[in-house]
Image 1 (cartoon, rainbow, N blue to C red):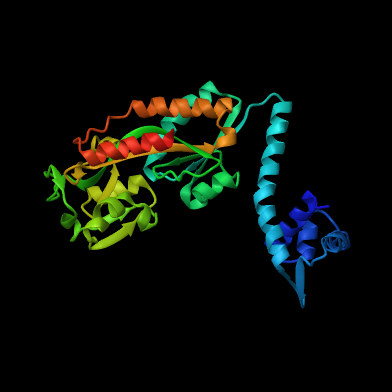
Image 2 (cartoon, helix red, strand yellow):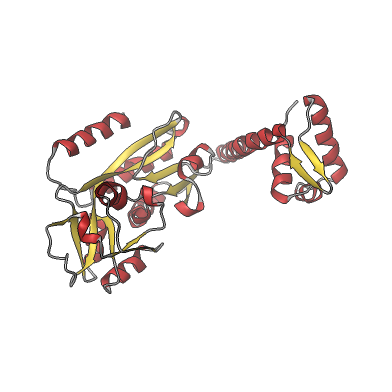
Length: 320
């Protein structure tokens, strides 16, 4: 009764705004498209659209049908693509979503040898502002998610690939450059530069400033790490980055990494995938290579405390 063509029509009409435009995009006549949907409405015993003049408005049933279309069609498209690749002797494609802005440089170090090892696999990378992390995995927009903040849900698997420490980066002449560690109060008069991420997902806020009830004098967002570090080096603000990345920039720019709090902020990077896909050979190979590349980064050395120890045990337990 309900066919793929019905879902496609509902999705295209909603996207383009009219039956005429949808018919053109689908290479159908408007009468054929209208006839198809009228027949479906008769079979279902309910309307999909309400006609208001020349415009269409989805009914409750239509809204549900659209939600099904948005969820199911990407899965069918991916299935067809992979089956065609199998038929042609190809491996497939690996679509990677990035929720970790500073990890882009690390990812480049992983992708280069991976492409050499797997010449029949294409790799595509999407930055966070182009998609919505967990939703993109469930919606089959991506196959792997690089994130420091895994959301453990049925149907998803997250694999920890490396540990790191989040630090504050300041210019060499800054008053905080010589400190062994800083406290939240030291940032009250600072311009804090971060990536364009919601504050509640920024570690320097949710694990350092907000628990102390502190806010910086000003919060500025910049998308690229290079520009961010240029701003910090010129004394126009401070920023928080993984220590390994901060030290890479400090090797060629007048920058210093300072610990956030006496105990520091320990983090992990995870690769998330759909549970149904984790046995795909080329996906497993990427996870293995990512773990090996993470092991080549400078190790995170934080003072041992009961809280840090507990958090690490908890993370390992969740990761399974």
